[in-house]
Every structure is written in structure tokens, then in C-alpha cells.
Length: 489
Ligand SMILES: Nc1ncnc2c1ncn2[C@@H]1O[C@H](COP(=O)(O)OP(=O)(O)OP(=O)(O)O)[C@@H](O)[C@H]1O
Ligand SMILES: [Mg+2]
Figure (cartoon, helix red, strand yellow):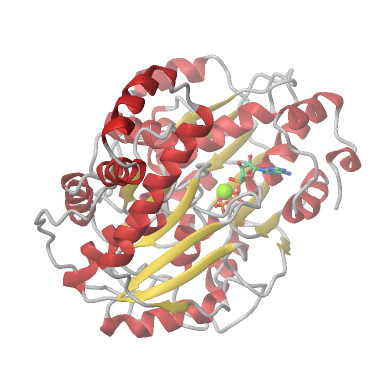
């Protein structure tokens, strides 16, 4: 393992990194940082949650000329939340050098962004649609760009985004350095990517599995109609600190989080049809622990780094195996452990097998938990809460009351009653969920691989149109653009 001192970085960079609490470099950082510092084009593939942001952020910022008042680096990301997160991480990395990164994304007031751009940031991290709006308005000029990064590169180069990416790259001088990062890099996308790059170095952190090994993964076979009750039981038994539940469609997400609230869980939903203000507030609440369960479309599947997410539930099976890798990767980040459960309807077993082939990992079957197990889970939680109160809280004000009670009843009876009151017993409040059917891409080429270079055969990337509508989730915030902008996620 290398430390960051081994890369010959500047003193200001070392200070920022140590301020962020990083000691050793992760494997992708160890390989990508020296190559990127040399100016090589590269494709970096490594597990979710292993520090790809810093793997490109450190060399990007290290090489930048602080005295040159132009945008010198651009990071393109598929969702607004990810653009914001990348900008935040780059601002931390650039803190002591004085490098500023601003996020540019749809749904935020464009005049506010124009004002921020006038302050001459050195880096922008943005979503494709809004970046193009600024390019057309000439409020962003890319003629001094030295480094371009496509974060979640396979997603950026698939059907929904490719035209926008091509349009953005056309504005950037060809002597640029281009870097692509993702946890998955299907062979056809790699082939496509090479068109935009100069003799790229492929850095693929070799490992048997594509998903993070420290995340326990299993599936339950469950009929559509049973799914919701099973989810509630699992939440009761596993009592996650923070959980993300992935649903297939926006309607599904809305219905699910409302149904969870009806049953007494603290849940919120996020998808591309919500206003940006709502999306921001949901994300803020979830990050701060104000809600325990985030129900999301795939808008939250890629890149988001939220500490404390202990569980991922695929309420609907992901639409493609790469999607599985990224969804599951929202937990078990930076060496932490996690648990991911996928609900599989009987007719979806082919999808499950395809996921297992890509991830090179057998997903173990679990039986559906019973109501009894859910009750036991909640009772255990009540006991834990009580013990914690005994150990950490000042209960002196309650002692007189307790002694009065003890004069009247048996201690064990009092305690049992208290535990009963504290236990959330399974809630059977009826809820209504519209049935969803799976749209697994029929044309998908199972030889695609998240692994190294050149694996598998060439095949169309992203086969079916009902599976990728377009890049619209990040768009729609602009005034120009000739193509229709369709919502996604
Ligand atoms: N060298 C390091 N030491 C400790 N923590 C690190 C290091 N590098 C990055 N991290 C932290 O690890 C977490 C995950 O990093 P990051 O979001 O960059 O992962 P990623 O590889 O981009 O994942 P994904 O594929 O999901 O986008 C972040 O909280 C980041 O600050
Ligand atoms: Mg990332």
C-alpha cells in the first residue's frame, strides 16, 4: 500500500488529503494518480466506494495552474446530486491550493450559476444538459480546458447521454487529457470510449468479484403482491441505520415511500420528476439521518457516497446487471460492511442469473421472513434501546416513580409491559401499490463484462428503448436545445 507521500505531491495537496482523513491510497488511486500526473488518457475501473473521485481529483488539481484565470478542468456526471458531490470532494482536495470547483446542473437557477461562473472557478463539475445550455449561451467556454473526466463513464456514454457528451467534447481542445471512471465498463462502451481518447491506459483493479466483497448479498423469491409486506418485515428484523430501497419507476417510488410512511416508517422518495428543491431537501434529510429510508429510482444508483447506508433493498430487480453493481455499491463503502437484498419475482430468475454472471458472485437465497421473526426483531430493538438508556441516560428523575411501581407490581411484569409498549408491532395498515412489470433488455448481450479490457464480444450497448429513455433527468433546466428532453430515472 502506498501513502499519498509516495506520489511526489505538493505540500498543499498533502495537507488537504490529510485533512480529509486519508492515510493510505486505495488501489485505484495507487495506479491512476501517477499515470494521470504524467498526462496519460486513462480508463479507470474499480469497485464502488473505493475512492475513484480522489483518483482523478488529486492529479487534476495538482496539475492545475492557479494563476491562470480560466476553467481548466471539467468533470461530467450523470446526475445532479453526483455533480454536487463531486464538486464538494474536489473543493476539499483543492482547499489549500485555493482551487475552486463549482457544480453546474439543471434545476438550479441559471443566473445564479452564471454569477458563480463569473468568479472564475478553475474546475466545473456538471451534468450534460445544463453544461450544454451554458456552452450555447457562451457563459462557459471550454477552450482552455486541459483535463476532461467522465465520471460514471459507461453511463455517460450510453444511449441517453452520448450525443450530449459528443457535443461537449467538440468544444474542448483536442490536446486535452481525457479520463473515464466507473465501477463497470462494458466492453462495447470501452470500444466506443476509445474514439474520444488518445491511446488510453486501461487501469482495472483486478478482483474476482465486481461488487464490493464486504457487502453481504442475497435474494428472496417473492411474488409482486407480497413484496411490500416482505420489505416491512425485513426493515423490522434488520433495523437498518439508513437504507435505500430502489424501485423501478417514479410512480413506484412515490407509492412506496407513501406506503412506508403509512406503516410507521420514516421514508422519503427521490426521482427525476421532483423539483430540485425537493430533491435537495430529501437528500439533506437522509444524509442527516432525519429519514431512515430513502426510496429511489436509479437516479440514486450511481456514485452517491452517503455514509451510514447499511442496507440496500432492490424492491424491483435492477434493469441491467451494471445497475445492480451500482445500486448495491451505495452500501459497503470505504471498507465498511453492508447488506443488499434483491426481491426476485418467479419470472425474473433469468435476470438474477445474468447479474450473477456479470458480478461473478453467487447471490444466496434467503427465505421470506415470517411475521414472528419481524416481531422478534422489533422486540430486540426495544431491548437495545432500553439497555442504551440504562447505560447512557440520566434516569434519576424517574427513580421515585419506578420505586412506587415496584412496590405495587413484580419487577419482571413492569419491565415486560415497558418493552411491549416500546416494541413496534407489525403494522397491517392496507396500502396500495400499482403492479410493475420488468423491462429487462431483451437485446442485451450477456457477454458484456464489468471486468478488464476486451472481454466478451462486441454487442450493442444498451439494447432496449424502454430501459433507457434518454438523458433527461439532468436536463430540462435550460432554455435552448433542439432535441426533445425526456425525463429519465
Ligand atoms: N484513500 C482513502 N482513504 C480513506 N477514505 C477514502 C480514500 N479515498 C476516498 N475515500 C473515501 O471513500 C468514500 C468513497 O469514495 P468515492 O465516492 O470516490 O468512491 P467511488 O470509487 O467513486 O465509488 P462509486 O463507484 O460508487 O462512484 C468517500 O467517502 C471518500 O471520501
Ligand atoms: Mg464515484
